[in-house]
Length: 383
Ligand code: FAD
Image 1: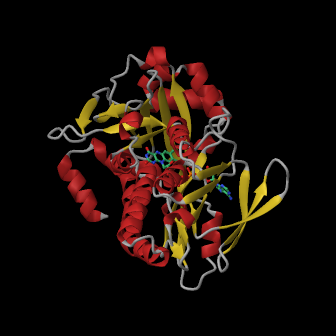
Image 2: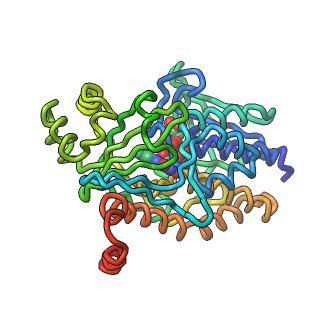
């Protein structure tokens, strides 16, 4: 089929769906993207799950391929390593790779999403539909039904290639789960997270260009820098422990005991307010035995392999999915059934491995990072 006659439907206009739409339009396909939420460019409230993200080499390669790597990195903050806040005040910095000076970049989720949508919209062969919620998938006939959130009406859409980039609780995946021999696992960990922030005037006193970590064995706090010198701080802890801290006094005592140097940075009043007002979010890891159904439906990003965030690779892996899909379309001349089969074949083991690494890395970040390396070796052997 001529590429200009192919219609690709993408469900989900988050980070991965937007990037995928960019790849597809650049290939010359007619591309339609449907997103449940408002356009993030016109509303301040369309917030994602984290304010900023660590963008690494995986994502950079994909951004480079669509020609926007430099633009995105220019608005990110390079992080050259970890800065560890120990309880004994003996803080230390550990560079990721002192030899090559490789770094990751802290990038605003909203900025990245907006830039991707902006780039997509520069192409004539694309249509973006916000406030459209996928409510039904007819895999056999390649039909999708969307509820238009503003009118309450439904519309039916069909395409030659249907891509589910609709996140960890994907409706497209739910349809694929009915296909015989499709295996799926979903694991919630008993830890959750809340986000807090450090204001720019105090933020500029912190060692810049690092991801800051307060490892406390059973829980941890991290901080990622923003361009304006503010920091986004995330506390990961067991949901039971969050429940225990149900008064301002308990919260403050907890922070003074376990994160004493952070109290001044976060501000007593603000940290208590943020803590009490925020319900901790759960963390889930999802594995699938296949990422496609038939010859025309594919899931990518968190829909295919949501992972706990401790390896900072969820978005990065999702961007890598887009790059892989694009290169397979190129290699197999847009033969969709073959491309989808190859995608699952190539991607499955890697996706499972990165989900496992992400799970392991929680232990590394909250505990093992504080220990001498011989002990780390032993711990890994014991796992
Ligand atoms: P999502 O971001 O979930 O986007 C899915 C989109 O689909 C949403 O816009 C949603 O509204 C839409 N949608 C859902 N259902 C429907 C429907 N029925 N109809 C229409 N649209 C629908 N990753 C990193 O690489 N680096 C990090 O540093 C990092 N840090 C993280 C920190 C935290 C605390 C968390 C929770 C995650 C972190 N991640 C990180 C992971 C990253 O956030 C995800 O992997 C990434 O957002 C996945 O993008 P996605 O587009 O696949 O899914």
